[in-house]
Length: 387
Image (tube, rainbow, N blue to C red):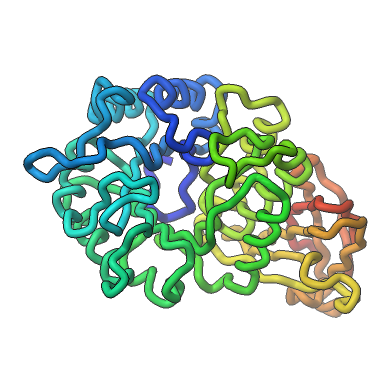
């Protein structure tokens, strides 16, 4: 990870918002950094610890600089960044393109260069840049380009995470802006309907993600089980089950989204850790060529609809990652005809398949493979071409 150029592959890390929203402090962030090391998240590839909204005072200082809330962060942001860096991790923060953040704290509108300088001085490695309270007659595209220039000239490498929620036809201009990743969706919620909605909204947008500008489908809700300070994000019925979280993680991984953990990893159970640290799935997400995953609709199309599909991601080594997804409420058989992958029967080529969740070889198949997938579940295989 340390030798990789910034933004080459999707970012892996943790963000405070989904679980803690406004209730953040220095000790929490330090504890998360500690857990990243002791529980193996760092070894699995996760590297960014990101503080979201509500970290500052409501007013800038007399020189117009942002000020960390001294009650929440008594040692200051530079000391916190230093602590995270001693763990071999990277430190991320939050601001907004508007006059104020979504929670009403000072935004970076017309303070972009001063704020970028401030973040660099604190040792920030990642900036999430939101889109609330933007003056309505000013181009959002221009504001993201402005902050990008500020970050690229602040004297420190800072990964730029644009977060305009898919507004303003962002797909058409975000790569040129200089952002390393960009939010293409509204906010995720810890429920199955939200995961389905965000997924379907990004199908057939495989051409809008790639190295140095990754399509961010929002932070992960894996392992939250309804636990959030926010009634919007959380759920009174306990969030999702482990099968749904597994499918969520698989979708975000094969579709090339950054993987930013949103649960309280200090209390993560074994099932949550097994999902979040699955190296077979993470390797697909982190494949160096960062190809988008194309969709195949299994036969019979009239029966399955939009909730049942196959995603295929071409990998750097010639292998193929294939995801069989059943977002519907009943068991389905998904039939993959290999000619849809470019492998006609006459080629003499078969696929040797490895199950990335069961971590085992499942055999060699020719012409067709048709697994039965339970409701809300998935299967991810890594397929190798053999003769």
